[in-house]
Length: 447
Image (cartoon, rainbow, N blue to C red; front, side, top):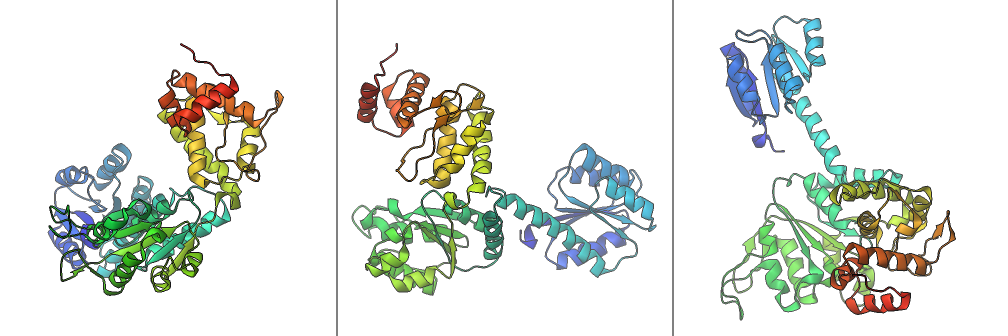
């Protein structure tokens, strides 16, 4: 939050106090509005657009404590309220704090005391914002605590970051969190999946082009760098960028200038770059697929996201997080996981990491028709011999993966009323594979 975007309201019937406070705070760069009338101040405060409200206790029309009660207890206004009293009454200050005031100032107070009180209120507000932004990173492990601390420190800088980690570990979520905690948070975050960019249009997509620059360029267009100007550009799977574009990207980062295709002079830009990859960049450099000088340029701050199997204590909190989301979204009957289901989730290796866990929980919320999730309700996709989780139903004895898959397919078919296209799409397989599995398992169509 920049100082220019911070709004402060002063409600005090003494004109000299109002004017003095306004001058002090305006010089600090804050937007300040004032009024000497309590009822008008109440009306202004109820708009809930202010970050801090300075409120005098003794005023005609309405007592400051009465206004405080209306703002906090009755309307839950989010602004931090600092009570101003000319009587220095400790009892009055205590009562104000009990009713929701953040702090109090006793007249006469110095300019330094006023600035300090406002800055303390804003600092706590900023800390609450940080906690809220970091709360999207679910987990209780020491690793997650360390990751959040690293993100808080990294976000304060403008350095280029390289996030590495397996597919599905949440690299883009981490990048977005860094942006939200940075000084650029009020500007744009532009994500680019480099693996989806067409080779011959990659340069134009990143840097933009002018009309007529190449066949099909019927109008001028900004690239992703221009779109992210003064904000953050996130290049996911950066190792997929061609060597030719890598060379131009290196120059962009060095010069902070973008070479628009078809334009002779480059454009100045101010972009914070965050790159990510699930590949071993060192191996890509050794094989000649990635420039070493670019690697050093983008990895000023390296941040490695470890796979889910290496911080298993976070599996159940993440599973519960998505269980809450999808039970509400699909009006699911599911309420909780059985102990056997929890043990299975923890013991599985999660090759697809958090993305796979999310998809697994979503599937069972759609298909499970009872409150307690059992082992037979869980199906892991993409299993390898070393990734298999124990699938044993404690109530009926041993259950094979074939049994689980058959039951899962039957549930999906019934849910989608045996519509092959929708069922196959939901299961992540093609129609032909679904029909083969149905034939092999002896699953027949139901009308």
